[in-house]
Image (tube, rainbow, N blue to C red; front, side):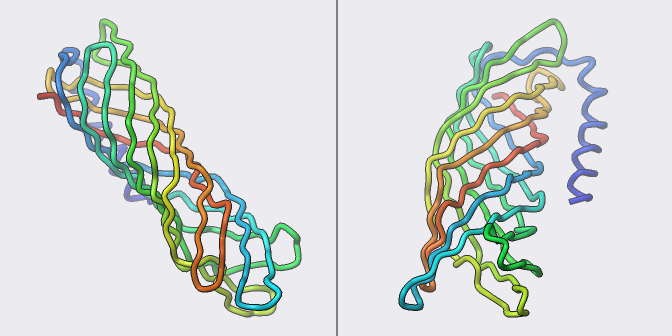
Length: 228
């Protein structure tokens, strides 16, 4: 993570001086790629174990470490707004699992949650007399959430499969803002923030049914737009 943040800082430091001589970009089609950090919020997970009769249920709060955020988009810049299609991927390791009843304390968590998102976005550009163009907007689409086999050790030193490895596709939306820094008439440095959220997913495997999982995150990224 430190290497990623250092790389982003270097890209910004190198690109900003060139922007002082740049002109605002003209309308036309464009593509963009970006790399950044995702910071997921905690999610409540209710799991039902069907391996015993009667079945048993338990609920936890899962929290995450910051993770990777990468993607690309293509669209058309109309001058005052941009319409685009975006593909992005976010993944974060599970940092902690807390039993909502307070009965069990888990440690040594091994697992992660990822989100492959396909979004349709609209962004409004607020052009001015400088090469720096603020923008805001958002989008809707869908995301395939992937939960890895997630293990944790309980207070009795038992190693448990907490959540099964599975995928679920759910509705997703995002909203955000940023700065487009024109390097010349063709290239723009994009510094962006996105709030991203999904509907609740359900994972069912290994006689475990884990529901209520969603990927809600704050995301920051550095990207480059190329105009054709």
